[in-house]
Every structure is written in structure tokens, then in C-alpha cells.
Length: 186
Image 1 (cartoon, rainbow, N blue to C red):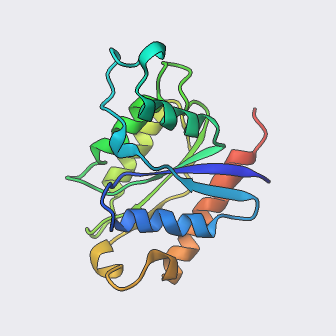
Image 2 (cartoon, rainbow, N blue to C red):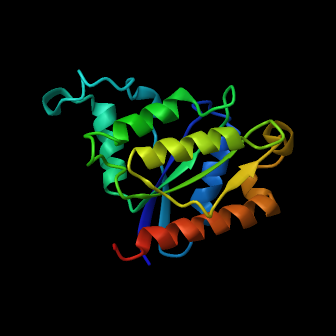
């Protein structure tokens, strides 16, 4: 099994617990799998069909599409903002969904994970991200879920990569995503 998984982190904050969760995923990738954090979501302009033209495609959007096009799968790391996913992540999904019917996300296995301060760990946001990714053409790996509650207190003194429960859950997610990403096309 050999696969490259691209992780998109829905929080732009440098000290984000979701970014830390994505960093933990990089270190926990199964053998033969590479998890790569995509850098630069903040530079991707809001999706607008007027600027989504081959001759003048914004460079940041082109880099995002290329990174995901060349990947075997996608890991969305989703914080919860006001009960839903952050705009930066929805925007990335919008760019990846185009051109309609053949966007970079089409047919890619997608796993959705995250952590949030609330008691449910961002489940609402993750549900919205799964929905958007599926509508955009991704193949959401539904049997893998990881919603970690109490992020601000839980990870105040501990990086997610040092939390045994997170390691177990994240390893299971990555194993399932890697299996989906390396499965023969049907």
C-alpha cells in the first residue's frame, strides 16, 4: 500500500488544536502512507466562477487543486464555528468541486475528523463537512469518525499526539482512509 493523503485544516490559527490534530496525523500515518498538510488555505480567494478560468486561475486555488488531484485521499480536519464548518474549509471544498463533475475531489476517499471546545467535539461541523464533500464528488468514508470534545482544556498542556485515546482513534481513521485510498477502483 502506497498513498499520499492531503490534510486540509479548517482553522487558520497558528495554535489551533485542529492543526495539532493534523500534525498528529502526519506522525501516525500507516506504513506506506504519507499525510501531508496543505499550507495556504488562507490565500485561496472565495470561490467565484468569474475568476475560475484556466487563463487566469488564482495561483493559490491552482495549488490546492493540484495537491488534491495528485493525492490518493483527503483528510478534512474540522473545527466547529457557530455550529458549522468554517468558511475557509467550505471554500476549499467549493474550489475542489469544480469544474462540475470532474473536480479534484471527484472520486477521492474523504475522512472527516476534528476537535472543538464543546461537549460533542464538533460533530455538527463534521456532519456539514461530510455533506459538502460528498455533494462535491468526494467519497466520504462514513465508518470513520473522530470528534474530540473539550479541546481547549484537553489539549492545554498536552499535544494530541501524546493523548492515548486520540492516538487510537486517529490511527483507526488513517488506516480506514488509507485502505479506501489504495483500494482498486470499481
